[in-house]
Length: 185
Figure (tube, rainbow, N blue to C red):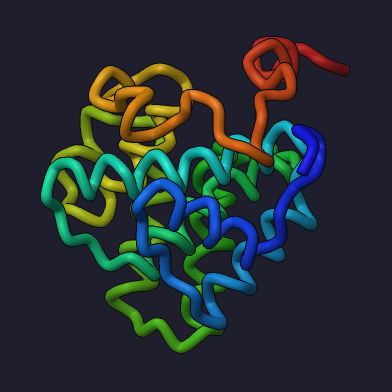
């Protein structure tokens, strides 16, 4: 697979296995993956996927036991609000959180889990709160922040991640885009 080809979810699960991860494979995860891929530019989708893998690895290393399906859905959908352009009256995190909550409810995840998806997405840029909101929310935020060199990045060694580069989910100038996007007309 070349660096520009993205694996489908089965391929992503295989990448996870190579990293000694057991990632959830349910209808909700498959549909969240498909929605994230359909809604996102390549750089954003790659960020989403790296975030999911980083978060799963950090949870494993720290001995945490989050709701893996909930975390997967939240991380996969965390930037759909950004991909859709946000809303003039709400931050993109809130737009995405509303989408994520509706998605969770439509996939019979239950009210409590849907609220945790909302919290995870709404708080993914606010570590000072997310880290105190419970294991699921913190695990989502950990993986997302880790992709930008934030919390947990130094915990991941090349030996146990073979990463900082994940096959199929390379960086595509995402950091540059994030700095330019708010100022684009």
